[in-house]
Image 1 (cartoon, rainbow, N blue to C red):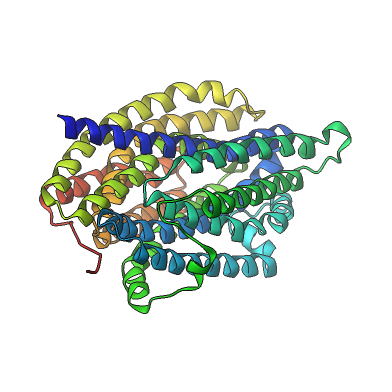
Image 2: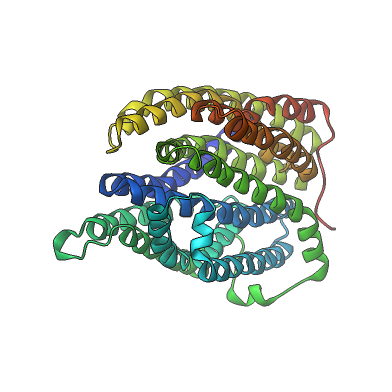
Length: 448
């Protein structure tokens, strides 16, 4: 009983901080959307299109961080920190490379990048204005996320929450002043939103670097650690992380393609999807936080070599995921009306966004079980290959072909298409349940 109480205490101390951090981080996007929605629906749609590029990039960087956490949490279970530093150095270099490549691409082809998500000329122009400034956030975001992953692997998570709260207030303050031109400042519209986000990202990075250099004691990271390399550990890292990176990138691309599909249907659909997706992502933080927490706890237990404890954790966590999913679905259903009332949208757009959110409140229940089970327990236990195969089949073999068919051949309504786009969150529960309870998913990734 004492051991079980300790498990729950440890889980919720990490989980609460991660969920709050995710909610606050996404609140920055929600604030952008609400302020821009009140300013101009065209501006809102332009930023929504650019945010799809941001989302794919963020999934790539977070995959590099999660791959490092898979390894480092197992080394943390063995109390070996030197290999962790070398793995984190490899992850940092990979993250900076991805950020630099994207920066170059959107700098050279801004109109083409935004044009992937909409054919509306004014929306593309607004998106281009936004992306010319927001591209400078890429390097800062990559460094921040890899550093936070290194801290998460040793169960240090509260700093991420404090950073997100700081970024939220800085971003909202600058947005209010620059989007509308308050207090004598120029009225900058989408450019004001971009400046707010860039300032917040730089501030996040600066505070985190100071914290790691002066306060963090568990890993003892120093600048010189990022210039060290180990070919063997780097090979281990990329062998396991490459499939995770691939599937997270494809999942981000899948989410972006949802905007492509809906954006080529009606003007109202892209704005409604932007609003609904932002609200849904906030509630989805409960599942994302559960997955990240489970990954650390399961990885640590695998590293410690206690297989019986790993299996007990898996069963306990699944029950918690179901409760979290039901509560999250209920929450999303009831908050949708007061949140939508904050937006200045046309009646057609608001009604469509409301319908999308009702669908997503049901989707939330299945997602809150399958995502933490797959990405937290199974992938955290070292078996990333299972998650990769399942996502490839479900998303690229079923969901996207079906959604394209419904949208462009059948000419179904945006509501029907949204149902198709999110169907995998329900049917992936079955293979996740079978694998975690009857499969062999525990993989020891560390070296002696």
